[in-house]
Length: 265
Picture 1 (cartoon, one colour):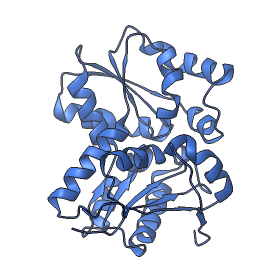
Picture 2 (spheres, one colour):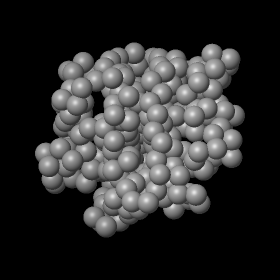
Picture 3 (cartoon, rainbow, N blue to C red):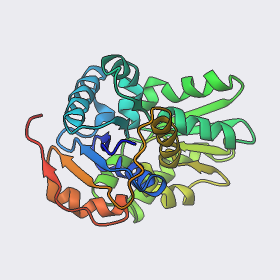
């Protein structure tokens, strides 16, 4: 038994979709969440910067006594996961790409998978690599959707503007794939819009898959908390904590209060 919190971080609000899945699957676990709202989006940053930011955040989470860290950001996972595992060998670090890839491979029937994500995630080829390592016969179509994150961060998850953008991005997948990986933790908030603009395509939201992997990792390392009704959620951001509180409930599914501002980054 280990009642220390699980650390989770993202460039902004998107990682809260992972926290929501963790809360559902692992209700006894406390969470310390870090949203790097001052430096988002990560999807247009260089690999060097993303590695630097991620390393700084993990150090912060470890100072908050995190027993494991989930990188709830596809861009940071793609660009920094292996480096971070080398830098922090004493703590389990979980990314979001492998869980989503494995779920897509399991669910595709035609062996044709689409991937959408930020420019950085798509350019990295991380999803293609993860999928082909497990099944080299799968065909993959990838597309960057850079406007999705800014819209979600503004809470604009419905309406004609985002619908037109989705139509532009997603039309190339119709009749070509049967499974589409939402390769950014912001994208589950656009699930309805994405579904409306795709035809007979199964959408893969990696948040639930990440939660399942987290359970296995915590179990294997004997880090699970078994103390009921004692979970605590702490939220830290690098800019605009009040705005994080206002929009956070959309991602988290319940009110977020007492978000703390971190000035050291």
